[in-house]
Image (cartoon, rainbow over all chains, first blue to last red; front, top):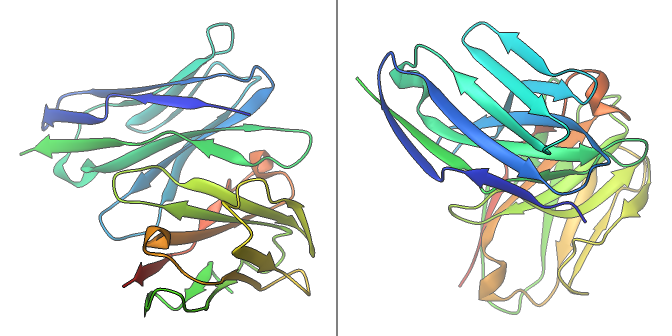
Length: 113
Length: 116
């Protein structure tokens, strides 16, 4: 089955800095890659996603890049704010059937004011 | 409904007891997924429904775990003879048949199960 590795497990930045979280996946058939933000005690919320026919997608301060050849994808957050502090999860799913997402172990992002 | 609803939000049970966790997905979402999340970990897949049928139950850890979705909407996750190791947050998510076409997976707030 699919295996998703996520790094780093913890990321501490100063407000205004950029943050990058990286994930790798094992199954080349994966073609949908969502990213979720989970605040303490709350549900995971979709923040951005990318399909395998696209190399990059941007939404305001958030961007995701995908390298299908290397089987890795990354989340980029620019101009970080304290409210960006949360745990971020990447996921990969194989299309054409169940689309069951396999999640990474999460990155705890801490933005210091 | 407007979102995915899970009940109860918290459940404390004694070791060996039976529990049921309920998930009410977004109206019209045909796909429903159950996940388990332990502290500091990512969601771990348990079972996936497409309509009424369990299309993939490969993530269920053992035969004490079972889930149903009899009418293709509400789903119930059932755990028999609970063990302390079952303690976790159980998350439910729903999506369109193809989540990549829009909306991704929408999660409920989860049920925090504690087995004492």
